[in-house]
Length: 312
Ligand SMILES: *[C@@H]1O[C@H](CO)[C@@H](O)[C@H](O)[C@H]1NC(C)=O
Ligand SMILES: *[C@@H]1O[C@H](CO)[C@@H](O)[C@H](O)[C@H]1NC(C)=O
Ligand SMILES: *[C@@H]1O[C@H](CO)[C@@H](O)[C@H](O)[C@H]1NC(C)=O
Ligand SMILES: *[C@@H]1O[C@H](CO)[C@@H](O)[C@H](O)[C@H]1NC(C)=O
Ligand SMILES: *[C@@H]1O[C@H](CO)[C@@H](O)[C@H](O)[C@H]1NC(C)=O
Ligand SMILES: *[C@@H]1O[C@H](CO)[C@@H](O)[C@H](O)[C@H]1NC(C)=O
Ligand SMILES: *[C@@H]1O[C@H](CO)[C@@H](O)[C@H](O)[C@H]1NC(C)=O
Picture 1 (cartoon, helix red, strand yellow):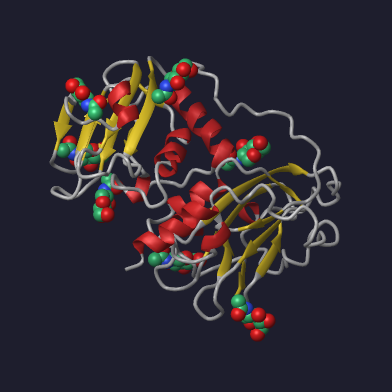
Picture 2: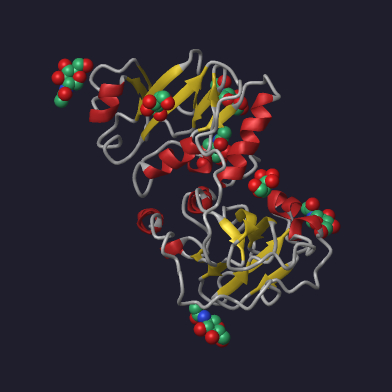
């Protein structure tokens, strides 16, 4: 199973990995979403592309159902206008593996019906080698800010996301999580829960052992220490179906000094089941009315559309 990458840190991690390895990388386009008309439009593939580094020799896997989708490589002009009249090639049988055999820009679209117009389009840049290409998301000094309250999934809330784990990956992408920030998990009581787990449990979706489980919505979880946090659900198969969120808390926010730097992160101390992360923040929980979610609304409509489009 592909490991979930998260946000900037994961981009850097993948870049570092590529720099030390000449092996080709297989990129499953859209991850578990596959190749289709993405609910919510082209932002799904744009986000996915931002999480990848493409090098000559890598392979794109277009995972689609023959007869329902196709994939064409086209020129930039045809990509921009969704013109499938004269594609460079057209492949109608899925899944389809495409080896990136030269450096440069590649443009792919779905040619069926209005698929391209609705967002089934992919533009990537392939670099010649895994040399020290500067990351587009190179770390920049974090500007001072107070604690931020993030609504996990925005309008989608916390559930089994239609389309799989890419929904929460998309949500977390580009967000900065600092000590003192609060995650709010909204769900219907009795249909979901929030399990804080180790990286191993997160990867394997084995929730036999958890660090903490919260069953009453809304769950307000204060990020109490620098490090990686892994969230999923103990409900049967919810994790396997994509209800999982991994985030990296990178620094203390200026408004909440790092008074708890010795506190182990969940992943570094899996047996610390007595920690009570919600109440154990480094300071009093931030006022819920200040600085709430002002930066987190961007994907709301996307995620809502995902929900609306996939629910039958
Ligand atoms: C999380 O962020 C910190 C600070 O940027 C970084 O040192 C660490 O490597 C990151 N962890 C992962 C798994 O990317
Ligand atoms: C392709 O999609 C199918 C059905 O969604 C899935 O079972 C399979 O694992 C996917 N393949 C890859 C390589 O992701
Ligand atoms: C689509 O591209 C073809 C050439 O590849 C061109 O002849 C045609 O006019 C284009 N259609 C539109 C609507 O631009
Ligand atoms: C496509 O790539 C995937 C992942 O490497 C592999 O499992 C699959 O066998 C390949 N399919 C073809 C037709 O080469
Ligand atoms: C590829 O990279 C170049 C240079 O950074 C940029 O101008 C271009 O827009 C990129 N193309 C795509 C498809 O991302
Ligand atoms: C799940 O994890 C527990 C320990 O937390 C372990 O005893 C059990 O064997 C694991 N189950 C599977 C299926 O790996
Ligand atoms: C869940 O239950 C708690 C306690 O019964 C209640 O306060 C809360 O409003 C409920 N949440 C939802 C989303 O129904």
